View (cartoon, helix red, strand yellow):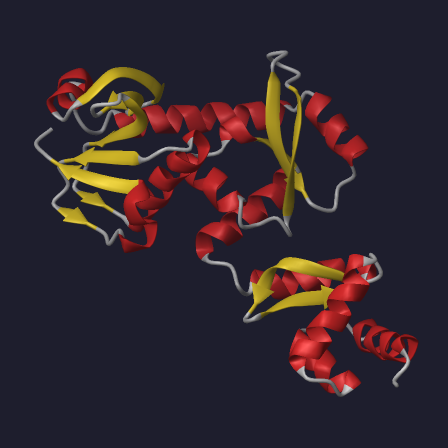
Length: 263
């Protein structure tokens, strides 16, 4: 019977050469991929080997701690443009208050656990408890220090972003949201963001999110943003729009629904 320590030594020898996929490790230890997965995951469970949550093809990326950056560089190849943008953003800012992210970014961040982590802390500006995402290789003492520091540059960027959003919102005439919501059966609206409401809907007054979009076309990005609301508020999101063109919505199932009407 083959000694488990000998197999371990061969796995480590392979990983010393850099991050590897299951098929590559299987070739090294001369086992099939199923056996290799079981063996390597055993060592991973003991903390001796690291692996990514996200897969590269059909396999996680296995690595030694010294090669974490290389493993993440490999995973970057699997990200779409929006995911890459968020990873680069967190690498630049190091720590970001979740409230400053769009709903789409909050939704996307759930699939980027290899690159970023979350923590709750007291907001230094408001004194209220807030949720933050931070770059995955930072220790919590460093994260706390960044949260508590007064970063004037970050505040200026936040201000400029808010001004930009206000300007964009003024490009189209403001719809009568209350009338639009009531006409489509949504009651007791509470505005949670500009043009986004938490409403009661249906016979049982189910809480749902309703987004009023007065624009010419609804893109995949709009659907991702709407899915973000569904994730944050744990309910269905409706998009009320007068758009002439609407992107496909199949990948979001019944969680995001479109109501086309005059606005």
